[in-house]
Length: 250
Image (cartoon, rainbow, N blue to C red; front, side, top):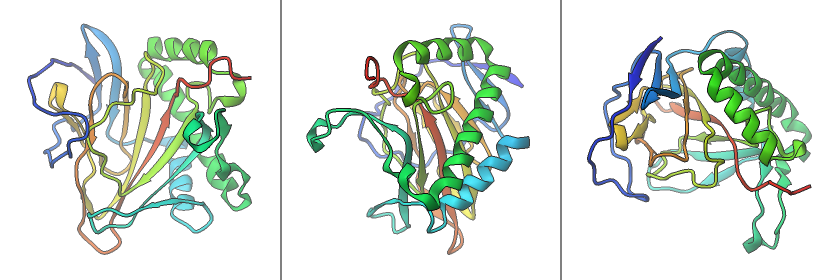
């Protein structure tokens, strides 16, 4: 696996801007470093148990067994998402306390949840193998900031599947600083859906079974437009992330 030092570049991108198509320029297994310190990595194709669990989770998610929140956008493609694990307080919805996603109460979604949790644990093993210092740092941050009942795996609090969702530029400001996200792509008969980080002019090739580990709180980033090349083409991103909203919540 090669190592690439990230170098800041000038750009005019702002939070909320749409992410236009960018030709991927991160195409092979790569460790990302900043000022000489590893902060994330890209894997072109996951293997072993992680791949097996992701296949199960993706198939279950696309079935009618898993509840979904649908989205209506001008893209013309079917879009929906599902959050599992912990959900932060939402005072504007008269819920000023954290909770566990209601999907966990759906019996038909149990296989999906089990597969996602198993995939999360396998992804954590990959992080520990490739960037062990980040693994130990994140483990400590989670233990210090998240009560055990709100943890998803050892390094995260929550997970989301995003189906055909091309996110505008944003920064994950609700995440625990110093932690990383995991993004695993399932992709079939579709173009685009690649993660772009304008600060470094880096676009990760979001091919089927690719995996990105990155500190999503650190930089503005977006997802390039998703264009199916066949009627049933899709891109699903399976994401694990650590929220900062659970400290001292018993």
